[in-house]
Image (tube, rainbow, N blue to C red; front, side, top):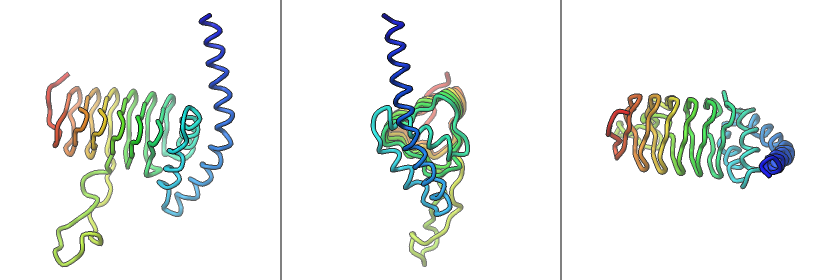
Length: 196
């Protein structure tokens, strides 16, 4: 019985993969063009709205072809998207529902809950010059945040700083300063709760 179940599961995955491939090719072409038009995130948003296992397969193929690096066994759940093609994601990463992934490098064996926002640093915008509108002021710009390996990030977190290896970031936390490895952080702003 178990062998039959495995055969059915394998066949199902193979069929869905074959169906996903032509859709992924179209999105890959659109994504490659969008990189030059500075509209990569718009194509990524289209890919994020395809449901079920079909959507997961399409997103995997799309990001495998358009991101700086995408490892094996990476799952992007419905609604999750990468804003920039220079993101790098390791192996065995599970990205939950409705995540926005900015300029980030993610290690291996990472679990991300739903509705997590990876902000590309805390200096993307400026308000220092009182003679200019905030919307036109330039700041330092995006910076790459590094997420280590063996990390769990709870739902509704905002990640604006790097995270060391083997860390847990509590649900709803706002991380604005780097998290040390082997630690649990939680709160707004996120603070060290304990070492693990």
